[in-house]
Every structure is written in structure tokens, then in C-alpha cells.
Length: 165
Image (cartoon, rainbow, N blue to C red; front, side, top):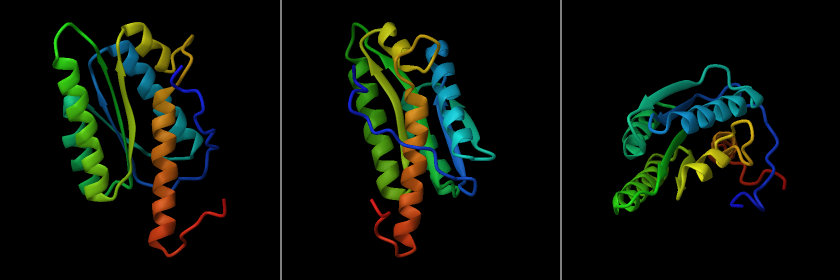
């Protein structure tokens, strides 16, 4: 399973971070699970008022993530799912969304939690969506990663280059 070896991040206090979630609409059941997982992570990390924005599909995630970063959000969580079909469309969308989200993070300095599932089948997506019976919760993981990274960046920008680990 893809989650093997993942770090076990403990929730930290992020009540003063400005956080946004941008989520695609395609594959509603999977997306509902990813968004719910991100909301659980934000609550566990004490994020008080996250913004949630929906876009049509995963291809649109980078442009909206970039706009949110430019609006002063300190962390953005990007959630989407692309399921392989019979055409190269899967490869193009996955590549464009991944490259675009990476560019947003690097060019703005705002961490983007990568919650884009790229799966061969709907069953694989459901297994990672954080739903009852799922083996992974990628929405939760993406939100936690963005939050911890935002706090790390805050420490670095304030002159604290290590976190003591």
C-alpha cells in the first residue's frame, strides 16, 4: 500500500494560521472523503476558520491554489482525484496539476498540501479517501503536511532554523 512508511505527524497548535482548502468536484464520493479528512486534520490542529473553495476538476487546482496563496493564506491544501481511463488524458491532467501545484508552492513560498490522488481504479481512490473502510486518509495527511510545513517556514523566517529534532 502506498502509505507504508509515512510519518506519523502529531497535531500541533495552528490556531493562528490562515488556511484554505481547494477541492475538485469530480468523483463526489472520493472528494467528500478527502474534504472530510482535511477538515478533521484542521480541527485536530486547531485551525479555527479555514476557507474551503471548490473547483470543477483537478486541472483547476493550481490556478486557484495560487490565487489563495497570493491572498495571504499561509497554507493551502489541494485535494483532487484523477482515475485512469482509456486515453492519455489521465497523464496530462496528473502532470499539469502536479507541476502546477509544485510551482505555486515554490514561487509563493506557501506550502501546498498535496492531496491529489492519481489512481488506476475507483477502488484505489476509495481506499485512500478516508471513508469508512478506507485504509488511508489522504485528505487528513495532506492538510497535516501543509500545516506542519507552514509552521516550519514560520520558524525559519523568524530565524529559528531547526525545530529541535
